[in-house]
Image 1 (cartoon, rainbow, N blue to C red):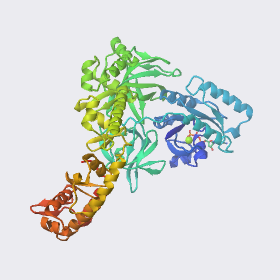
Image 2: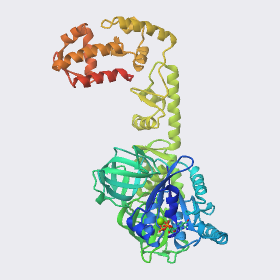
Image 3: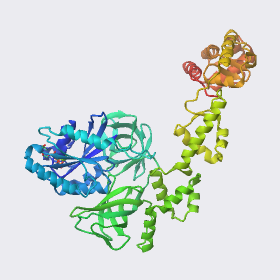
Length: 635
Ligand SMILES: Nc1nc2c(ncn2[C@@H]2O[C@H](COP(=O)(O)OP(=O)(O)OP(=O)(O)O)[C@@H](O)[C@H]2O)c(=O)[nH]1
Ligand SMILES: [Mg+2]
């Protein structure tokens, strides 16, 4: 799933182009239609020739609405920069380009619009103008496509170029920590609160609980949509609408973030690396008041420049930002800074620490920030994590402040160099070794014991030489990654199937006939020639039910006899052991394990010498059937 946003100067034809490409009018407000101008974000989607559907965010070009543009371009994959051939590069062409660069958007296609309005000479002039404006940006090599929404020339080519730009991108990362910076919040009649945004860092699924940060409101995810289709699971990097139960839309607004509860906190103090744009007219001075745009949030911030008294045009440095209201931020997040009036984009940067640790404006502070940024300590952390250790233990072994350590751990998790096996951390490389070790041990066990469901958990643990407290979370992770599957007390490779040899199959064929012929007086496994492993294997395959160590029955017999008891009990809700013996025409010795089996399934309950039916007759019958049809795990 990919998301593209438009960018470019007012009236250059962004919305018209999106309408021509998708058939969807992104200008959804009445005021926009009346004024013929985009004011707030618009949304559309497009199926590429390759079949992939992409989301499109259409932004306003007018200088008064740059703040809305900023709320739309976070988390996008590429930009569709629009420049009208009859005007060429204009102020918001440049401002949008600067913003995209600050936010790390490095891919895109340039649409040179209104080709029908210009002759070849003017088109060439405009092209050169655009090339020059792009030259010092990440889009320097972007393809320029001349189009006209009026005559439709160039539109197919434009879509092909867009597909090419998106085609070789890595899929968006799943960090198991979904966050949706909210760009719209509204009430849908009949549904309730809905918020929309571009999903990052993880999946959301219908039914899960979400938290709104800041504020901490909780809500249940009642429904999910992408491009107006209902979905069960939203993928990172896609445009998503969340239908939330248990919150009032009036309490939600742009700038808040929907997250999995407890995974992200809001902060009012950020430490950041800031870069001031070359083209800005005013330097970023110490104690300046600016607007911070992070995600979809926009807040007033006081700047504390940590090195020196100001950052001049083109300079980078360290700063702390004191926010008038808390925002949900993580180390590594990009942001943009603007002066409020007259409005101007000054620069932006990357959050280094979102943990609200106040720093002194001293050379040592800057030196420590530089050291941290250069990554020496990160390597040290990764090297310590070749064995699973807790955060507390890691803190004891390193001379880093708690906030600094937390920020580094966060960065290393995001970079996938370490992973969390709560409460432990472990390097990704070492985890990969555990995975291959566990797979090798399970494969060896399957080869040696083809009749067994899998390697006993305890045996796998000692094969990997792990302590129990580390083993438990590691095993959970191995199972979650589907390297192994849980078969009750045993662990198996997903593809492992219990296999009887030809001889055992032959013995079983005869045994089955004997069991069928003597339903209520069955020979014991010993008498049938079935050893313990074979019995377990057959039970796994769902061909045998073990009622007691020396009592095995065919599932059909259990079904027939069990139903006879259940149906009899259905009349009064109860059945005496003697009556159960009679309706099954068996012995007390035989019927007791059968009743115990029904007890274990939660169908009956023992009351003195009687059994009481725990559920309704139809539920009881269904439950028995279910137990007999699924291949039951080894007890
Ligand atoms: N002749 C001609 N006119 C165009 C073309 N594309 C857009 N226009 C016109 O240019 C004007 C502005 O188009 P919009 O699509 O609203 O421009 P925009 O970039 O979305 O403007 P903002 O959202 O306000 O920044 C409208 O009157 C369009 O009809 C084109 O290819 N040819
Ligand atoms: Mg528009």
